[in-house]
Image (cartoon, rainbow over all chains, first blue to last red; front, side, top):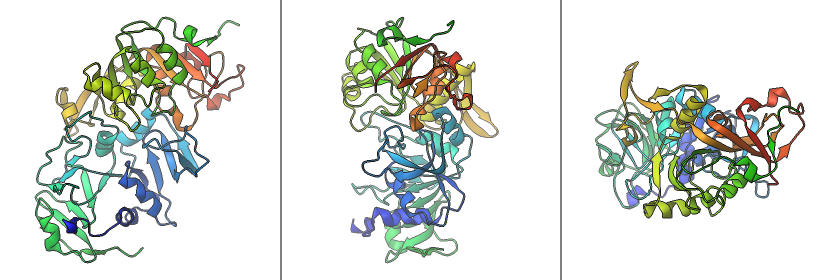
Length: 225
Length: 222
């Protein structure tokens, strides 16, 4: 359905996640779409990006010609280290995660349920790979999901109950999509934001659980505050 | 010179590695992968190995070469299928290799536990997923946990940056990854480094893996 696209770029979606990151937070960005969030963090905010392979203070992609293959991110791509950045072993890095030291983790998802269940590691086909998703889902103080509202094949992604294997139960706090911003609330998802030109009724059609409205709904894109 | 862990060749570095061994292999993708040791191991005609590593090899070099040699019966890893890997997927789909999939933090902590003398630990990670189904569950502080056992190796093959004859070692940036943890968790730990330096030239504050955890040091050209 065309509504599911809403003409939004991935960067526009990533910017809304970035706007909700606060000065001084330690944040892990999942591979793929969530990594775009790094490019939209307001300059005056000092947000420290963690990469689970042992880098604290990821500073974006390495400049062409200056790639160092000993300095890579979770996607195994060469990155830079910011001033003040540091390295640690994998065990220490996952100690940070499991020990609840990260403020926010942003991940992609195949499915999220109204109770905040997350499915994002395996569709049940071919060779499974889990990586750090389950550790991050349980370890980060707050888990946000950044994803297209509807799958490429038209399947709904915000669902009553995940049909794909779970990554973690009741872990997702906030969902950012190309239709809006949502919060799992148990038997419904609360609408916190809607993109300009998107109507609540359209979103309901593309969402597998009831939407609810509590308080104001932000008009997206939000101004920088 | 009472202690000298420096060896002259990969063959010497891998002496005693035999069929059926469990081998811990450092690296996150190519970063920190002991490719010289792995490629030497691939020529030894080994069989029945269990390899513990974050990934399952890329392209045809390093870990992929060891897998392609038919030496490995089982991979214990967190993310076997990555862009650019074809050897593991082919073996897996042909039913020629077993896979034990472990969440990344649980994998590193199981290895850490082995090196620190901890038999097992409880973790929330994976408790409510298919990977936790067959595990022992326990409610702790109102949360569901699963029991995960320590994971030790007969050999650890790791990649460092600089080492001395005692085996004191440093690493390079994110290539550190599993190195320090695996060094502690194997009966025989072999580290390949790009530079061997005289004893006393590594700042003691900068030593990441102390020599007590290292058995053999191999200097490699790249």
